[in-house]
Length: 234
Image 1 (cartoon, rainbow, N blue to C red):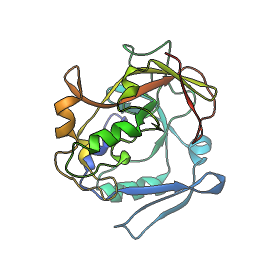
Image 2 (image 1 turned 120 degrees about the vertical axis):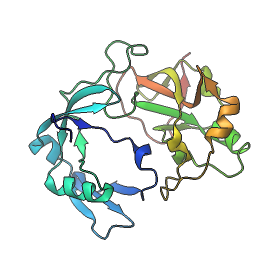
Image 3 (image 1 turned 90 degrees about the horizontal axis):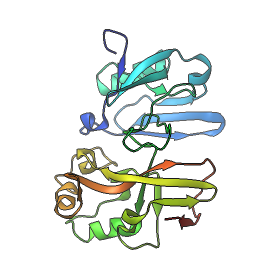
Image 4 (image 1 turned 60 degrees about the vertical axis):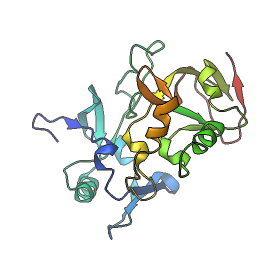
């Protein structure tokens, strides 16, 4: 926490040499968080705490400032001990407002704590093509997409402008620029060299940046489930 009371985001790539955190949700909105190298497990933490008892705090994400709710002292102590730096988990309440980059926003689109956009889509065919070019196989986890589609040609998603999945209409707004975090193995948190960025830089550049996947903005709400068909609108 900074001296003026702001909470600053700590990018994951600042800690890529640290062992990875693992978490999963349980029934009744409980959550377990643990690290393979820490004996203590943050068990059965009630996720509803943020909404009912959290204290509002201003936070900063890539220069954007918005209001968030912080977790309690137990959570703060656990994650601070883990990273060796005072920090905490935060939750974005409904009344908080962080807008998508105005260069790409459609109306007043909002995003929570993602880098810049709420959704990222990658096709299995694109990853398969990348793996045909790199010396060692890269998993989809390296790129952290929300949506993975199949039965397409490699990079076919580059040509889409809008899609529908179920009742959700989604606008494709820009390619996703990739950072050094893609060179970290998500299973163990270890730096794995210069791939896949080195290979992607040879054939996947947009406005001078290495790109892989497409950023999306939802135009309507609805439920998306595994196995749903993707309709290409334009």
